[in-house]
Length: 124
Image (cartoon, rainbow, N blue to C red; front, side):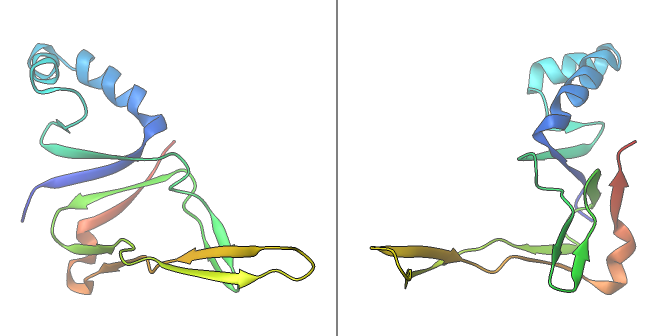
């Protein structure tokens, strides 16, 4: 389909680098030649900031993502990152000045027939 991927937080990088250089001569040489973290055993590695996978509640909806990562087959899902951010200035009562608010739409769509090709990984 397009290869495999895994998304990890920057706090996971230490373990991945240790694994890359201690897996064996071939993988250690490959990591030294091609640079660390790009790919390991055919799986592309993407690093995001720590705090990306968190548990949160908004209204009546609760997400439990703390301690999880995501991986799977490429090109079977769509991630919407905010482009065209909206900014507003709002009056603040009892205070001189204004409050600036920024918002954008973020989302993830998993195509139902291909849902089993994306997995949620629990770190133990």
